[in-house]
Image 1 (tube, rainbow, N blue to C red):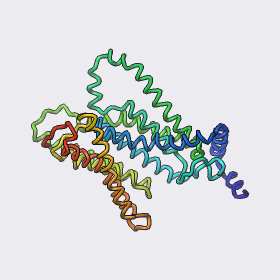
Image 2: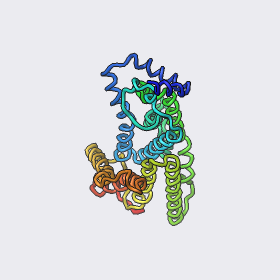
Image 3: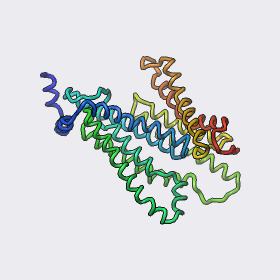
Length: 346
């Protein structure tokens, strides 16, 4: 008890206030609500991210799915890196009675909050550049029709992250300030996806130049090299920040390798929007199963932190997951005739 009192004295005033907020929220706690929020807090963030990325990547819009995957991995990795730099203990370290969910790691910022404030707005509002250009040509009457649905989208993009943030505070695993910082980080990544990425993409891929086929082929290869280099840089940034944890860095480089070095260099032109509902369902099931194979292999090999090159093994494991998801799986879909996309020699 004396140690707890001493720890409380060392607690920053903002964090002390945060613990009081958690206690106030938990005054309305109920065992049923607690169990619901335990499921909701993970299913609505990381579970939703994995599901929605797979759905877009293989069944709706490959390009959007790829961009969501890049951004989600970078958001998660950056969040984890900031946690390791700040090293803020969880609130229940100072007040064990507020812990309604057991969890490890550091507290600031909230990873669930950052993911939720990025993924929901991105799914609802982000459109890859080519889709943006086609939307600009539509009549204003169509936009008026969609005004009601736009309001629903805005409401969902606000309410869902709010619920996720509330669940983290309610469960006693984050200070309110952790949630606020997580929301800010996720919003920043979303805005970068909406406004910065299209500008970079426009410079790389959408040139008005009508050169000969030879020149276009050279330009395509050059752009591919630049895109792969950018992915490698972002992957390296996460390794520098996160240090021990390299999962997200491996995913980013793996996604780039699968997309740029495997799929784009193949004879297949995969179109995620094509195919029947059954074909799309089969693609999702097969894609999910194939992406899990590297994780299963490393699990069966029982590679743990006792290995000298554990970080390298983990990086390779998630590199393989990304490469399979973005490159190998779409090729297999085409070979199994589960895609309506036609083969095209590049």
